[in-house]
Length: 194
Image 1 (spheres, rainbow, N blue to C red):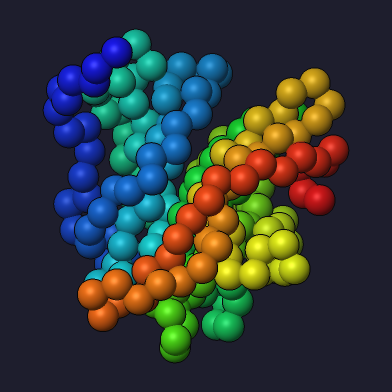
Image 2 (cartoon, rainbow, N blue to C red):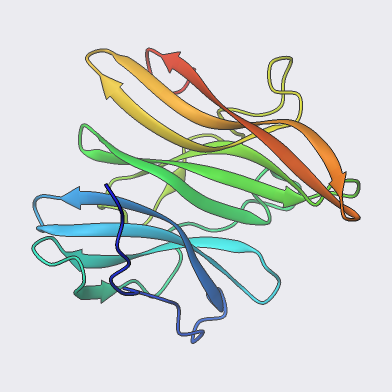
């Protein structure tokens, strides 16, 4: 199967201080009760900090924008937290009457350009707003992930949760810049958290 580029559906206008460029990492979820595809995306401010917002697309014709949300769905983390420079949606799933957003929380570093972790936030209003489930990440550096973990996709199959995520295995200097090397890993859980 080959892909055919049709057109660009959305790009930020730059009208909001929190959204000057980028509509990256699109994360769609079908909201049956509204009959829309809600597509969460990451956008950047003038300081390259990342916020998450969304657009609603027609479920019958995804090239039609029905609504553009005019604010981030959650605030950046507190200074010093794992997500004080960026909150980037990576996966949104329905869990009972809530939406769970697994997101890439990131901040800048001295010896490398950035550090990623995976956070979890929950919405009870169909994604208009999200609140952190915890102050810290659900996946971060540890004895298994010594550098960082990022981009994640989560599926609940029967009573078991599966998550595929990006794992930084090392940093290498290329052309004078530090660049991460990645592997895709899988983890399982019985609650989507541990």
